[in-house]
Image (cartoon, rainbow, N blue to C red; front, side, top):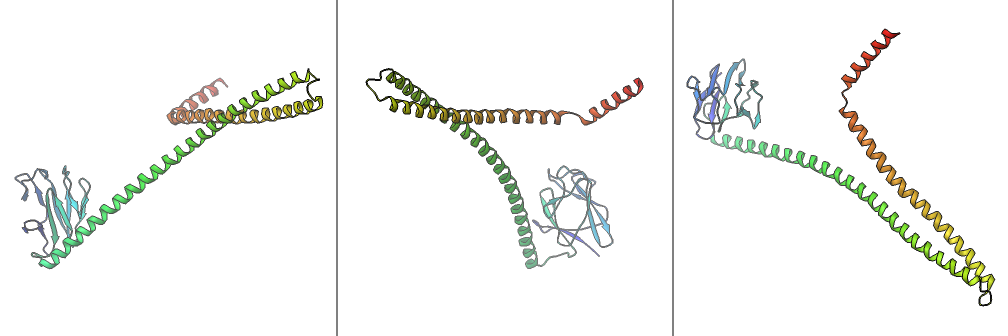
Length: 257
């Protein structure tokens, strides 16, 4: 059974033969004047039910239906496969001349396949990009949350310090008034002092808790940084070197024993 390659641009027909070579070298069976084609670009091998195409290490490898074949690899060709050799496209077929309608239909189908492949690659890239971007956003959100906690804690501590000073001034004033019993009610002053002491005590406790929380957050950051540093050092360690050194020390220990 005969098989042919039809140039999609010029409609030129090549009848395939076993061991037929394509390239720019003068001793090729089909010679190209195309800088995208290597000296020995590809070779066709006849098999029982058709042909295989072999890439001969071309700098611009052969493509089958838009998919590049590996260097020095042989691929089985199927009816209506489109081969890209340099800047030319060829249709592999067992018919010497194609019906115009079927040819146009095939071109449309080939374009649909190419568009579908491009869409798939674009979606896959976008999915990977979105996943990476989402991870970064989550990390930034976590860092911002910690910053907000620290800022809020510091703000509350500042307010507590101001309030504590105000209460201390009020207490000192009450003590001065207490030393002049003729001008104020002593029992009222005592109650006021007791309440002020209770408020100062509560504020002090609240302040201590916030300081612990603030220090705990700072301690967590230090521990986390140290953890990351240790992991980085562990990654740099060569497990084979460690195992070799361990065996060497074990041998020395056995000799001493």
